[in-house]
Length: 280
Ligand code: ATR
View 1 (cartoon, rainbow, N blue to C red):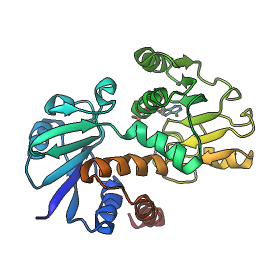
View 2: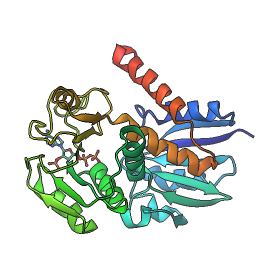
View 3: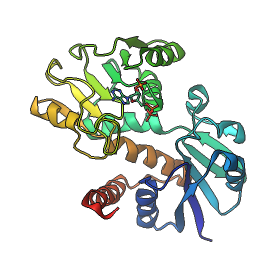
């Protein structure tokens, strides 16, 4: 029997998940299709209920439904209950299990693609939206020594810090980056089609030598921030690895087999290049 998985969100037309998940299933010889399930809020309960069908392996969940799906599920695993956000649903014999692989995917990307172990490190997150929140949870779980959050709207940084507690704290917007081992752009600054595609969210000039500069923006892969960090001789990591590793961890929840991460990267990069070429 062909099984299926998909991404639930609104909109989902530009999601890369169908591209790299389909490549992963095909590479592993699994008879699974991965669909785009565009789901307005009014249809969310029906959509989630349909995941209980035998043919469905599970789903990814994206904006704006990561919180709203929770009461529709049977059990929550990992940190998803504490986080109050689910991005992966697994159908096990009609019972729905929710997980969150966003933050763990970020930490896996740090470890596997930048050889950066967050335990004991000082990290600055710039931005305080959903992405920053998931990353802050995962870094605290990974025993970072300090996770500082700086946001243009200070109250949002304070809210995330207050919710998670130590080692997460809020620091002023435009705080100097010099005291950190790793600085992460969690804003949409630098994103193609975003509010400030040519901007940088912070100045890297004062970063300490060896500081890892991470951008969670993946389109373009080489953002203005990453370019300036490279020019300053700093180590960099782009946003695609976080996206791929959250997907790889979801794939492993659904299938129980190791995700073919290289295949997923290649499929995503091919699609991003196609889109950048104007063929989207
Ligand atoms: P996500 O869930 O992807 O994190 P979000 O919740 O919309 O998205 O958060 C976007 C983040 O980018 C916020 O931290 C936002 O700052 P505000 O809370 O002050 O709005 C930040 N952001 C967006 N545009 C920005 C800009 N031009 N300069 C600085 N920060 C910006």
